[in-house]
Length: 132
Image (cartoon, rainbow, N blue to C red):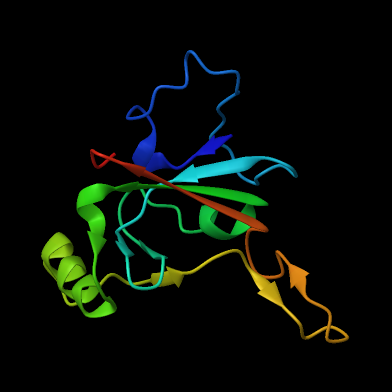
């Protein structure tokens, strides 16, 4: 498992049966555990925003992406996301904001659905009482 910089030291993997690494590139078959800036209840979307200690590449390089969402990060709709991002950064918006709803897929190639075309093949969301 590759753990995003913003979660290192906040999650305890010591008792688990997984090895934690923090190197890029992400090896084939490895999962990435990352946090998010917000989550949208209306669509099941999580929001990844650039900033210090946030490596946006991790959201797209792993076959399996595990996103840890604090219950307080969940907002009703997309409009609330922009307000939350302005408050968090004190600026208009971060340099890069990604809205991710489900695993990556496309049907551009021979009209056959291809999973993992532009990002992870599998996406799991873990909701925590506390924000990591």
